[in-house]
Amino acid sequence: MQVTELWRYPVKSIGGERLDSASIGELGIEGDRGWGVFDVATGTVLTARRSPQLLFASARIDDGELVVTLPELGDVDERGASAALSRWLGQEVQLRKAGDEGGTYEVPIDFENDANWVSWTGPEGAWHDSKWSRLSLVSTGSLGDWDIRRFRTNVVVDGSGEDDFVGDHVRIGGDAGAELAVFKQIDRCVMITRPQPGLDRDIELLKHINAERDTFLSIGALVASPGVVRVGDEVEHLPASK
Image 1: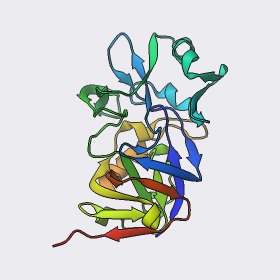
Image 2 (image 1 turned 90 degrees about the horizontal axis):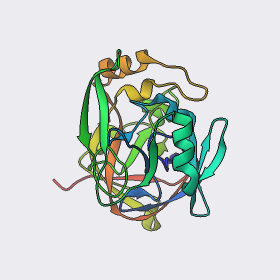
Image 3 (image 1 turned 45 degrees about the vertical axis):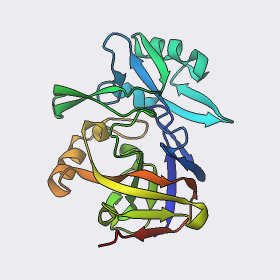
Image 4 (image 1 turned 60 degrees about the horizontal axis):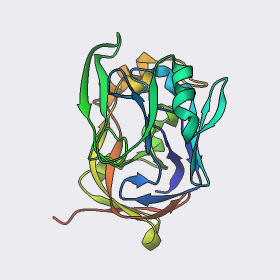
């Protein structure tokens, strides 16, 4: 099993960037989910579950600086992003860097009608949904023909069988690479059905994953040992001692 793709999403729920290599620290790929769009009126961190328009923007990190690209408005830096995002979304928002407090997020239980919303608080440090998933991984076998952008997974590997890693460790990239402690399968929500550049709305996708994969696609891990990973690196399964 080898790494075929690496992805970083600097701003939660905004399009990300494909990488050739990535430094992985305690919070996952450095800069991943490092910023979020804070809704001033509700006190929540916006996601494409509530604001699908976000997926038509993109973000990257250039020489350590965040750059957000908005339709019709072009590139904006971190200092100008709050005003530009507010103008583009038509509501008052702030681009906030993740810190010592986790964000509040929302999801509709009735995903077909965007109804029956519930909220929860995520972990501190980066705008991740779960404290048990700081880095995500999926295989090409599980993805099939589905576009990886639907799932916003960090690491894509060839082959199949990543669900068997849950409860164990994996090492990516040998001694100089990173070791991950895999804690969970990642359950999917309405987010994967949202339209984005080149992709239409697709409710049937979530119905299929709910029916055929018991809601799960990708696995979530914490970082046991930091390191650098690269496309082409080997992925080694390290089963827990029995």
